Image (tube, rainbow, N blue to C red; front, side, top):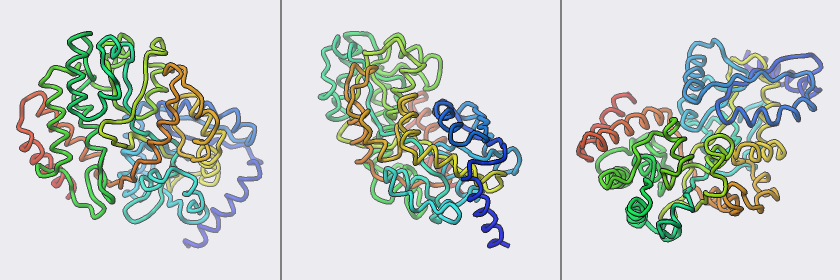
Length: 415
């Protein structure tokens, strides 16, 4: 039966390449700002596949992934193509509800060498299934308001030498300009927890599923300690990400720096704070660290109705250089495709960043970023650890006790 099913899918795949003679609708579920990248390529898609209408189902980030979790569990309401953010790839992969693109008729192994290496590892499950094709990546970057740092007399390069320099600069910025160093001290944890990982490690688990979180892990201990130092010094604005207060802080210049993926520049430019054009610049992360900060993938649910055309769409979005470059220009979605990273646009200055040639910086950072293993419990661990960090920052909980409690909770959930 399995061979018959595979043969049927191969036949359908071959038929789909004939420009889809019959009219059909392909359902694609996505989240911001990946949805705008899809909208940007629809004209080119319509030229190649005039009889295939893309029905885009876009929901907010959390709503989208919650809906896809439910759909995979119930087999109801599944799209033909499912966008997945890196934090959910491991969770969705272990549920066995996604197609293994290593196998026929996809045979995606031939395409893996086309992408930034670390992103291929991110889409590979513990049992070596390749469950999603990478479309964009998030090279970790440090964004700063040049006007604020100039007013404070702070050198951004010196500031990034190490974390002590960053915190010292934050005190100067606060004293001379009144601006907070960062939106929330938890942002420091976000950087430290992602950088300097050993080969075969994920953020929370190693390749053998051993939990890394705990009071004896130097990386987590340092991440919590530095975050607390920033909070105790009164350097953060205590503003959560993806909130109206966060957007206002960018618009008004009440926060001087931000750690994120390169994609945040596109969001600032297009809708968060477009009027701040020319005021921002970027640098690499502190202490010469490199990190993956987000990333998007396309997967095909095993119960999808139009798998053959879904695969054509995914290839169109991921291995077509023009699609990748279009998405990058449109909303700053940094391409996972290596040939797209060599496009001439990378040597150009970025107007929003005062014509700084930031794309070359990001490209080099992406190629120095080590693969990070994913685990089905990553999202659970992330939630628990961040809750314990909040207890440290807001309730004064002892750091080692918080990490001990986080470890116990994660182990309990993982069982």
